[in-house]
Amino acid sequence: MDWKFWKKNTPIHEKLSKPKDIPEQIGMHLVAKMGKSPDWVWSLKAVVRIRTERKDILDFRIFDPKKSAAAKILIKDFYSLDNGVWSSDE
Image (cartoon, rainbow, N blue to C red; front, top):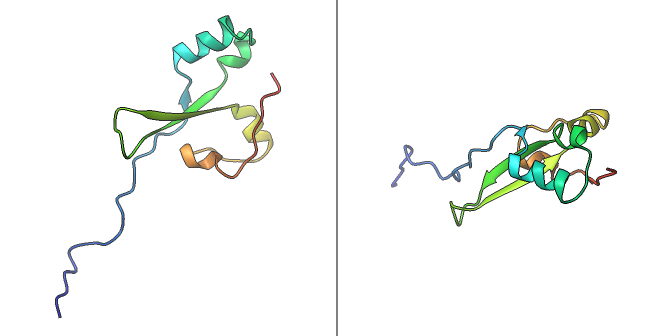
């Protein structure tokens, strides 16, 4: 038998960020170009992941923490938003 117990077969888990403030460029675009309320825009949060196939590309999702709290959904990383159906009322 050739057991190599020190080598694990589990996939490498990507490091995911916790919710953060939205990037300034996105906030400015939402306010200036799309006419959204600045108070609402700057209350939004974002979660980010790095693409596995291309490290120079980021995927991000923006959410309203008030809506997620009202729906009793805990957003802790990028994949926390996979199971919810989200839409913007603003």
